[in-house]
Image (cartoon, rainbow, N blue to C red):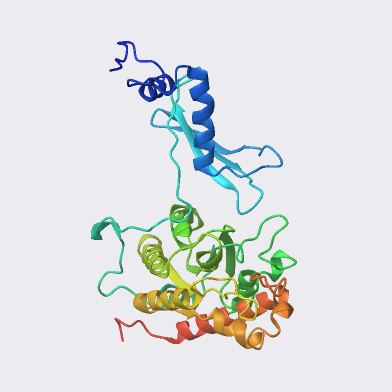
Length: 346
């Protein structure tokens, strides 16, 4: 039997003592165990081969409730930046014991209880009631594009379009302003490349300072090809996202279905089932649904002309022409939604 000393050693020493306990200890030297243990940890973590050491950036730092908090990011050779949160006591100095918490990149969305999930109250407005009212009163309409890389606009990237002005959401806001000249439509891009619907739901709080009137929820591509979600998980996350946008921010929502991949060169998984859950979530909430898949297939002749509307024949990101298709499809859905009366108030 191995007895731990009354003065507790550091964690590696404890694990070494436990590993060397018994009649025939496997390890008699701490450094030998340390090397093998580190190698095993790196193997289980599936750390990729890196041609360079990633540069860790501090995106934001602040103090809260006695803690010093740093939001960090670094770029791997693929995918969106990896993000992490580092916390320690605000007044600490020197080395400290640490706990590493890892996030599963394919989360399973779980509803804790009914009270945690916002849902439209009985008699709540559905459709695009807020936007209808603002147009009738000739007031400004704040539009937010809430989605993944196709809606993302940042230095060097415009969702596949050549310029920010050619991104589908920008084109849509401009078209809405032309269609309803009495109101000023402003647009904010609230999109992060590589995110699936559940990951998008995880940054819902960031929508608050944007004070949206109309939110275009455009996820789904990464659910099928990058950060996979089962269709049922997509449906749960999307339904919760829509409900919380409406109840927390009193904003209208339009669900934009994913445009999908080229049926002539497919690489998405469970695309049809994901599209079905997106449409069902929109129908259940009573909000407009943009069937972007149908619009893209019509424009590309079922995929035969895919490269004319996308960055490549095997790429799901639209080019300028494709973004025009996205904007036109969304405009038609919004115009149809603005013609509908509230289902609870005939």
